[in-house]
Image 1 (cartoon, rainbow, N blue to C red):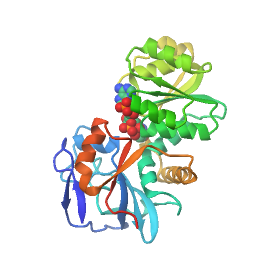
Image 2 (image 1 turned 30 degrees about the horizontal axis):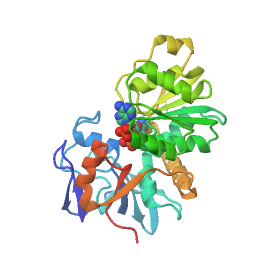
Image 3 (image 1 turned 45 degrees about the vertical axis):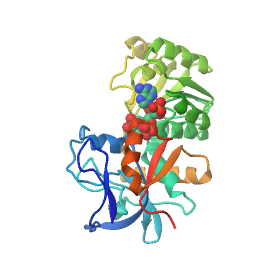
Length: 321
Ligand SMILES: NC(=O)c1ccc[n+]([C@@H]2O[C@H](COP(=O)([O-])OP(=O)(O)OC[C@H]3O[C@@H](n4cnc5c(N)ncnc54)[C@H](OP(=O)(O)O)[C@@H]3O)[C@@H](O)[C@H]2O)c1
């Protein structure tokens, strides 16, 4: 079979012939239709992630959508985080209990593009963030997959107003297309200036901030929260630290919360994927993405890493039909 292989950490994958996987105990073979290139895939393949340096060669791809026994399924993989091969291959071996059957009307490519990023947006908003109908939400990084999904999901959950923060003009355009009521440019690291922009874009203090960025944008958004407001952090695209003041935090008794998909039980994750697939099939949830055949994986990997892709790139190992 053909597969993308990371042969050396820090280098893009090479597409090559390799032996098809042999399913172990409890595993089944999935014919892979769609495999997204996510920030987690890129991070793990650098060899510098908190999971450690993966043994090479390995097939990257921490999630995918494929067919198995006549069913269309979403599946996870530990590729890059623990020994094992991932989704960027024509065939993947997956524990049968990890498969999530998708509704018949789900688009495999769209579900792959949304995947665990949309799961994180959904669970961080509702489970960790306790989003209630009528609330005003600030979504940071709203041009990314987590952010676009969060804008749409917050709207569906009954948010009164959704204010987006996004950096590049292209990201701001994606946030606007996702349906944000206002879009704030995150093109400066000046916290006071960003806070002023968020205040101008909001109709009074915000209730909840969904934050995949941290850094200056999160510190600015925190200043616009109401007393007792919540900020859920799930990523650090803008910085590993955040210059939030004690006076902001204690003065308004804010709740700063962390979120990771890794804490979900298999049942919670399956339920969230099923929810995401249903929202996508209904047309309420979508995200900017493009498809690339498996043979183009190396160039696609580079573009996704540089941030020059038009949204999430989804590798197509086997075209559907
Ligand atoms: N905790 C979890 O379980 C979980 C799950 C999924 C994702 N995440 C994390 O969430 C983050 C976003 O994921 P994603 O899938 O949405 O990624 P993505 O689609 O690659 O989007 C990342 C976005 O971040 C923006 N960005 C990058 N650096 C920035 C900066 N310095 N200031 C402002 N914006 C910046 C980019 O804006 P431009 O378009 O302008 O470059 C881009 O739109 C990642 O860190 C990812 O690892 C966490």
